Image (cartoon, rainbow, N blue to C red):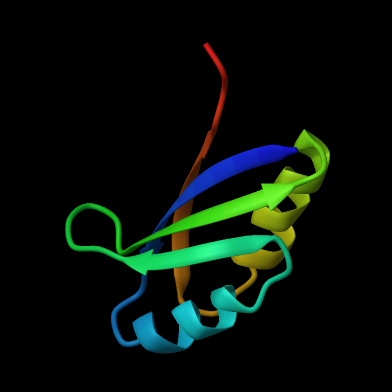
Length: 77
């Protein structure tokens, strides 16, 4: 299982709508609005790196109001 932390920058005025749409995407475990450089942090899980890429590129970035993302993939040390 791949776990990712997706940092999201949202366009002004779309915050609530975008967060509610992202919350229901399959694979999204949690969405937390934050203050700072990013507007929300999403915790997501997928079966493979390819599936995570599809989730981010086709689903999260496809939500109206998402300006940009940065995805951090969890690892083990």
